[in-house]
Every structure is written in structure tokens, then in C-alpha cells.
Image (cartoon, one colour):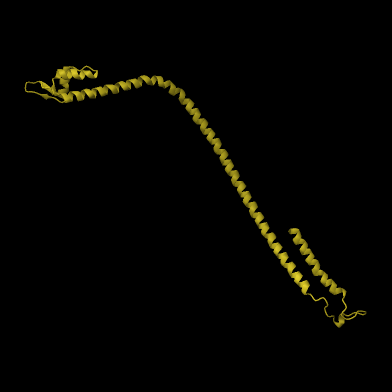
Amino acid sequence: MGSDFYTPSEAARILSRSGKTVSERRVRQMLQAGEIAGERLENGRWRIPQGAVHELLEERRKDRNRESGNRDNLAQSPQTAPDTSLSGPESVRELLSRVESLSRELGRSEARLELTELTESSVREERDRLRLELEREREERRRLSDQLLKLRESAETKPQDAPQSPESISEGEEPGSPTAEPERGLQSPLKRIRGIASRLLGRG
């Protein structure tokens, strides 16, 4: 047969190189089922393209390698199973420990946050209270300063020798002589000035 084709017996011998024996009868069955390309001649003989045979051989080798790899994995799994069964509970315990640690840390962080908020609130309230008290002190100082200024102006502008009416002149007193009543009138503003000054100095 031509160099580009194989007979069923030649194809069977080549396909057996995949590691699994293939008979000539099996090749004929594959030809009839269309599992491998081939042409039947007028004399009833088959000729199979070499490319089709080598392509099928490569596929069978790949299948065999996959089967071998699966068997190797299955053979190794009993050895690794004990390690998995041993590490499983340890991993669970480790995760539980980490969860508990994180929960405690979260609780401490929430407590610190709450304490910080309370402290900030107290500080704000105390600051507002002191600010309000300071404003009141300033207002009181301004009021006392104004009052002191008015009393000083009043004392400076008050006449020292007020004219006396004839009715106010008593026996034995000369007209225009100072009396006890004007002196008391002058002493009253001075006492008030001294009192306000003392309060201002005390607040200062």
C-alpha cells in the first residue's frame, strides 16, 4: 500500500505504541464506526491515512497520561488525608481564638470611644460655662467702671459753697459759712467711689 497510508494491521501495531494493545479487528471496527478516517477499496481492503493514525495515537497517549495522573493523585490522597484531619480542628481553634481576640479589642475600642466622647462633652460644657461666666464678669466690670466714672464727674462738678437761703441760716452762723449738711453731702459720693474702686480692685 502507498507510503501515505497504513493497512489495518499496520495501524493496529502503531496504535499499540500508546501502551494499550490494539488488534487489527478493533481497527476494522473503528473504521466501520467512523472513529478513524479510512477508505475502503473496490477489493474490500482498507487503507488508512498515516496522519489519522498518528493523530489517534497522540490522543490515546494523552488520555493514558491523564489516567495515570489521576491514579497518582488518588494514590497520594490517603497520605494527605490524615494531615487534613489533623489541621482542621487546629485551624478552627485558631480562628475562634482570633475572633475572640478581635471581639475583645473591639469592646475596648468602643469603651475608649465612649469615654472620649463623654470627656469631650464635659470639656465643652465646662468651656461654655467659663466663657459665660467671663462675659458676666466683663459686663459687671464695665457697669462698675461706668458708675465710678459718673460718680467722679458728679463729685468734681458739685459746688463746694452753695448759697444759703435766709431760712437755712441759724442763730450764731454767719451767712456763707459751711454747715454740717453740705459736708455730709460730699462725703456720700466719696464713700461710694471708694466702695466701687475696692470692688474693682478685688475683681482685678
